[in-house]
Length: 85
Image (tube, rainbow, N blue to C red):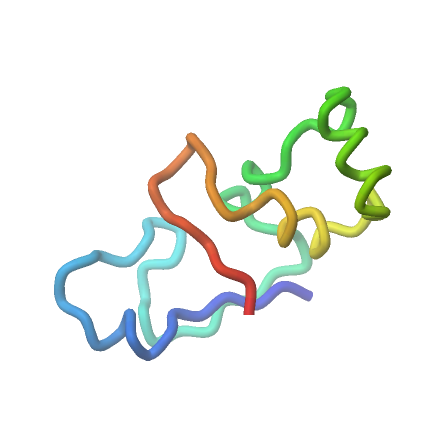
C-alpha cells in the first residue's frame, strides 16, 4: 500500500501550490499502485546503464521502493525534488 501526504512545512508555506494529483494538502492519499507522478521517476529497467547500477548496488528490480529511493530524486517530467524519509 502506498501513502502520500504533505509535510507540515509544506502545509504552512503559502508560495508553492499542491500538485494536481494531490490537491488536498490535509488529506492522506492511499493507493495499491504507485502513482504515475512517482512511477515516471523509475527509469526503464532494460537500459544497460540501469542494469549496471542494479547489479552493482544489488537492487531488486521488482522492489519499487528501492527503485524509487535510488532513481527517484529528480526527473525531467516535473520540477519537484524528492527526498526519502
